[in-house]
Amino acid sequence: MELQGKIIAVLPERSGVSARGEWKTQDYVLETHDQYPRKIVFNVFGGDRIAQFNIKAGDEITVSFDIDAHEYQGRWYNSIRAWNVQHIDVAAAQAAAPVQAAAPSQPEQAPFPPAQEENSVDDLPF
Image (cartoon, rainbow, N blue to C red):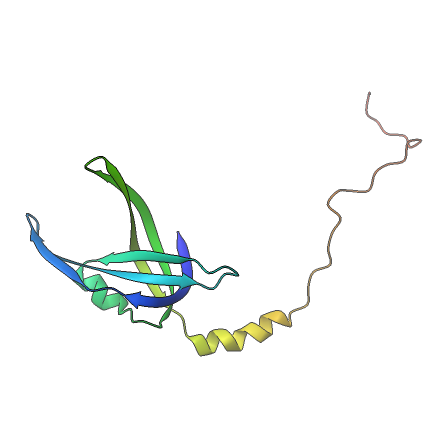
């Protein structure tokens, strides 16, 4: 899945050591630009990805993520993990917006073809 929006919060990085070695994860809060803005908390797992994505509060981004759920002690929890983040140049997006609005619109087509008259001859057997 993919969402676009603004980072409104960068939560503290967490790290630890497991049987597979050292790990790092960081959570971020993204707010969409819909008519009724939605907020989503997603995480980036791995120190290399955290550094690669370089997400800061106020950044405009498009985040690609996977949603999964897991059970712990009889309760279920969602996990929203980002696998790709693309930064959006706000100035370029605003400059492109008027061009898109000025594009000529396509004429609307009727949802159904015109009905045939009752007296017309067709080759249907019924």
